[in-house]
Length: 309
Length: 249
Image 1 (spheres, chains in turn yellow, green):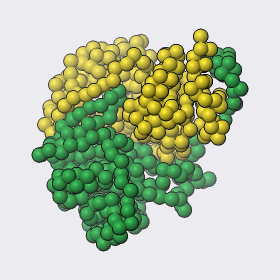
Image 2: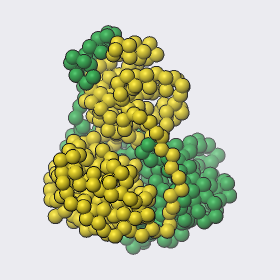
Image 3: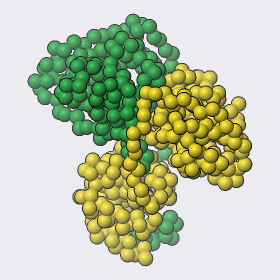
Image 4: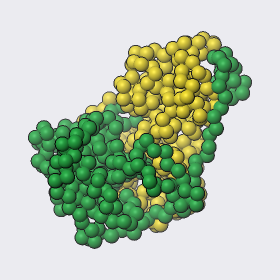
């Protein structure tokens, strides 16, 4: 029996979330294979071969796979037979996985956080306010993995063989036009050890950048934001933490001027340590914070940065 | 060009659900329900396309219990022209819904199908993509901008790290993200008007698809509780606790 993990990569390197998904795959039982579908992606395939627990890497290399278009990627995955197919529950995984599920005529099991047995899995529902244990009645299991639920597999201790297969053809129905990827030196939000998040209380994009950057720079942290802050234009869309944004589980999450709506808590309550800085003593965020600081963030954060040395 | 939109009725986003004591599910009896927020965005986008003269007709569809008529009326109050309810009391899983939607797509032949990216209950995020696959249509998920011109739709998508633009050949499926638009408030005159718009009810059997559930819910439990911690008197104490107690910095 094989468990196929669809690697997320930029053709040169494997993204960190794939390591967590490999761990989930190993828990399903069977041999773990990793598909690297891309263009000029030999380096990514070699990196995948070094992931602990992976027994085989399958490289599909072709122009139609260069930009991860869902139509072509799904066709590529369908060309491989496997008992289990696992994607990371990221923007890319969520884009492709349901297409594969529908074509295989199986139900997708979304965002699992635990493997209970080879056919039953735990997944959060209602913004994480309940955890459902579901059993798949399908012969093949198509799964997306909430990567915060699983530890990362070691990235360097494996030595799997790389096999090459024919790349999928272009569907001709969709075409990549362009992308704007924000470049920054910060760690990736979903993989960072420390996340500093800002809310509406920041008041403006300028203040958000000034105050939140200050603390994030000091701690080498990734930056997140509440929906209110993103809606108000203080921070870009892809920094939104919560039910419909990113799910994070860092060692330390510092919520600055975030009230703590249930939808936001859904995205960060699995952090190991939560710090909340908020002026409002009644803010719901204090109900989940390990350490609360009732203070004006425009004074508290510069002070905090100073005292961190 | 017809535009088809799928809407779902869900527990209102403002309600904190409770897990039933027997672990069989969450208690949604007597809980406020409304149109899934992402679906509202889908309806708004379709109606804007019609207002721009790019869509000829906006059709709202839903699969589920009779109360969904209310949700479809809301869609028509926003501006959809007519609605179709595939009525059933059976619990529907995404794949089963998708097969019904696919039957409606075959029947109505829309140029564009717009759906929300996820229902804020099961949070599965799959219906639109599955529909695109079964109908053999191209898709654009997490859409933040949609421009239709000729037989193409250019869609800007929110991806990890930034934005991506793809061009789809119509017919196609677009799956909305949060910031595609801000849905309008429905006005009383439009609610009255919506009551007169046609709403067809069909039985799943009429569509020739019947799908048994593929996922069995074994139990539903409360998530691990996270208790409130302690309030710090000042920044110095906070720094000290993070260093010596939590050891995270």
